[in-house]
Length: 163
Image (cartoon, rainbow, N blue to C red; front, side, top):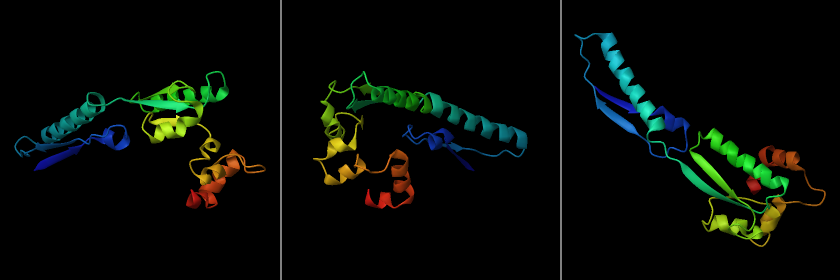
């Protein structure tokens, strides 16, 4: 009998990209009894799960460029987002926030992410107007929807078909 053990932590943790499958040649010995064989299987499963979740865990460091300077509330919201991601990923994804002008000028966040200068960006879609006219619809429109109405339209009103 061959025992295939797939680490369960990889299934639940998208930051562990290396899928680990351990193939253990396992021979059931009827003389030793069910309990001894069961304990062997259980100990191998425990070891694989423990090692894949701790010893082989990778840490990813991302740069986040923003349009916002450090003195406004949007910058604080971005810092909170980065901290929340770090906590939810058990420290495996760490985002360093760079305010406007640190790496790229404030209105070049979109291009910086597209060109690989940073992995993630935070700004306002109205700044992308020159990239594609469709982006303007996702920014402020006079007498347009607020953030809740906009989210409802995206999810339930057919907005995602246009996106």
